[in-house]
Image (cartoon, rainbow over all chains, first blue to last red; front, side, top):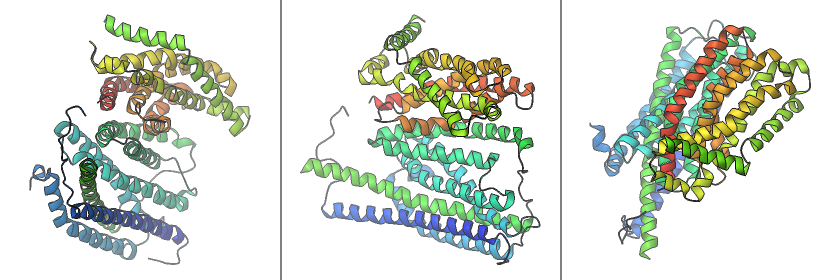
Length: 60
Length: 242
Length: 221
């Protein structure tokens, strides 16, 4: 790629923006996975049952 | 591998754990190849010069934006017809990614358009349709945020996704028609670069890379949704038990 | 048949008595109409050029934003729940309510809009085509607005959400509505545009009742 072409700035901006936005998306996704896993481990550590102790009543 | 076999959330989690590294790894690998092909190997365009390289991230973004919305609509239909437990969650997880791809398609389209047509934004058929698609994503995401009860939110979200999906071709058709109607009054010719092989290959590779990237993100996000539901159930049980 | 008529008559009576139907929507319509020249300047030539499009935008906003009352009152006082147990299917109820809204708000506005076009220096020759196009287009506008109302009936402050969901669906209506009334490229596109508007109205008539009924059921469990 010719790094001195007249409209190079647009190419850099487009690729740069895409990279930043996708990196943020991936990071947020990873963080959510982390937080979720941690919360789940915390609850499982307290041996919280997955199902309710008492059955749900018929009408919601 | 039957898809139905992985309808069970627990089985899905097992599948996801196995597949995630492959999805993420292959996405990164393919995109790396695509970037090399697009930025190093491909020659500048005869008319557009280096700016044609923006196409390699603009078009895959747009493809993904369309594909993700289609998947959301299909998931919503599956949720209604088969009451598949993962379907609603899959659609919910996918929406933000679809919105990101739509936004990137718009932003890179704008950056591509400025050197090509001289303005930051043009109401050509493709950009306008993508803009509306972006709004459809926002509306869908807003439904999940506005309704607290998950099952009710899912019921409404399904409707919004399916109705929106029915409208996508109608909107596209009408915007195409509108655009051609005003073509004579515009100062530019909406065209695209002719697809030579040297441009086609980077495009296809990046298209595949972006698709893999979406599925890598989707599997991870869907896992988070499944686990989040479990957490909710456990929190309710805990509140009840104590 | 009498059940359907009863449904429509009930909504019409309520709308006429409460007076919150066409009047407020018309007021909103006029307000938007005033803002347009204030925003872009009083240049008569420019206003004439944009008049059809501006009238359409003011119309669709008025129809959409007046739609929340289609289901709200009945939802809140439990009447809607009673209707689900009544003789008419929910889809029919939704259609009749949408029809009532069209008769009380959509259609009156659609007829008034071209007549108010002179405020934007609308070319007089376009009044007729505009009445026709808006009359037809308002069917789709009202039906889609009722879908938005159903989807957001249980949400507080659902107005913005309704706009976000339904306005993209208005895109084809606006495009073909303006084309049918503004005479771009000559009269020859008005005919096909009207037919497409009719087609959109029919598609809406067939799909909206099912989607809206499903949405209402989700809120009433």
